[in-house]
Image (cartoon, rainbow, N blue to C red; front, side, top):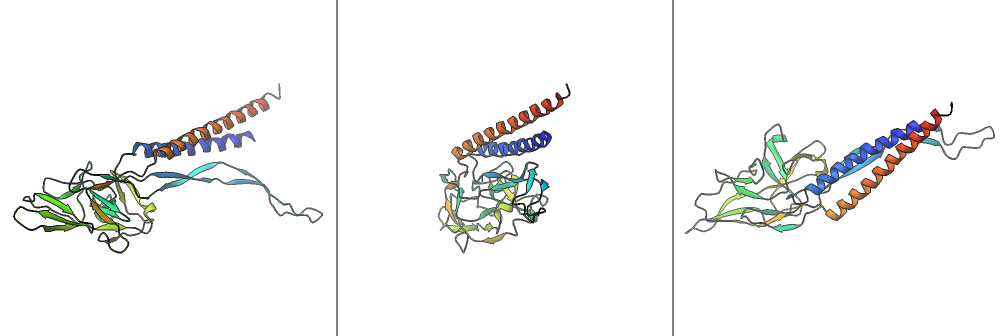
Length: 268
């Protein structure tokens, strides 16, 4: 009946509204360091079986096809795109760009991340009041493991393997600390926590830590930042497709409503 068409179209409107929200968020973060775009995945709902394929009639002939009426669609999840963002010039001595796999580790509250650690691709690091290397976001998360720079340091140098050297006048450059990266078997399973952070989940698996440039870990490029991997052109096309699909589902509801109105007027 037309009521099924209305319900299916309504489920389409709900699913498309979610895709619109995700697309808008991607576009809003087109300039966010280390941001990874997301896409919405859909799946169809249950089906009403009105005739089963393969059923035999009195002559022994089998029905070649079945008769199924679907009940609509729903969003099955959002999938993050962890392709590398473009390198952009930084303006700080602690700006770091991961060329390859890996996440920086920062300290968070125990109730936010497992083991009090969260992960980020944003490499815009600065020093706090205690001369500790922290992420330049709204909360100033400390880099894990903690690295403290001497107050006498005149400049800071970051090597490709994540070693941070402090340059004190009259002395040879000294090692202040080592940056460690973390990789995951399934990074798409990480939980998005906002503030450029991800946290571990059961789907992501446990982190594997190591030094930049070793084995499967990316190298560090000092003085650079990783830009957002959002492609504005693709997102705008997705926005238009979503709008058109929304309009078509709205028309399905209007057609079903007109059908029901015609049925209601048959008794007159």
